[in-house]
Amino acid sequence: MTHTTGAAAELRIRRLTPNDLPAVTAIDASLGGRMRTAFHDRRLQAAQRAPNLYVQFAAEEKGRVVGYVLGRVLEGEFGRTAPAMRLEVIGVRADARGHGAGLALNRALEDEARKRGLHEMRTGGDWRDHTMMRFLDTAGYELARSHVIDCALGEALLGSRHEEPVSVEQHERPSDQNDYSNAAPNDFDQLARDTVEIGSLVPSDLEDVVRIDRRRTGHDRSAYIQHKFDDALKESAIRMSLVARKNGAAAGFLMASADYGNFGRAEPAAVLDTIGVDPNFAHTGVARAMLSQLFVNLGALRIERVETLLGRENYGLLGFFYRMGFAPSQRLAFCKPLR
Image (cartoon, rainbow, N blue to C red; front, side, top):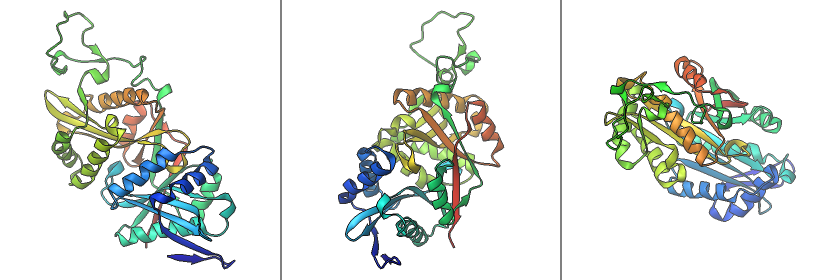
């Protein structure tokens, strides 16, 4: 596909290839002030593994790459039941701006979304990034009916040495065949993550997770969950995807991933895509235990912030996250219907 500017200079939009990696990282470095070759290399590899989920375009002007865009199909993240296309990263060389490259790249992403039967574009950005805010406005995005909330691990009590213990009845403690301690008055005054058996996601957990998600949402999202399993088991993000068990039964799951540069981030963050608790184990501390363990794992990975996206009508879950130390983010969610 091609696009001709008013100056008659030809702007060509094409698929991004691995050979474009040096040009992409150079553009990214010129905009963000540092090289992120590993991030873009991982992204290109992920696109090759799952071309049905990832969309990537380059903009060429006079034979050189002057811009690029990275998109991803949203399946079931953040409680969604209808898929959408997410604009994750877009960048244009400073000396090529004003020629329509950014808008052309976004249009290419929208056209691809329509071909795939998707009806909505999604993205996010820091409200203080005025250049990106102007671009999103020009491209037709509007504020989404969702809230981005986040938590800085350095300020959180959950997962830290200052975390308050929870009172646990003896029959609710996870079994431990190697616990030979003597009973004492404070034996059951434990941290949230000590009250539930928490483990990293493994392939054999797939059936349990699909079952819990179906019970919780009333929808079969097995395809989405399978893709999340594939990502978790092929990337270092495995330590961010957790399964909780009580009395040997799967009680809940949490899926998160590392974000090393989407939406113009300067520092790595963790994005919590999905958290689910089997209704049979509701209000037993499972969700809090999984978050506590996630925060511990993120600290070991030197990731300093975790965020998630929630619908404004989801009062119960919003209240839970606020109690866990989350707060409104400086980042905003945007959407654009595709007609």
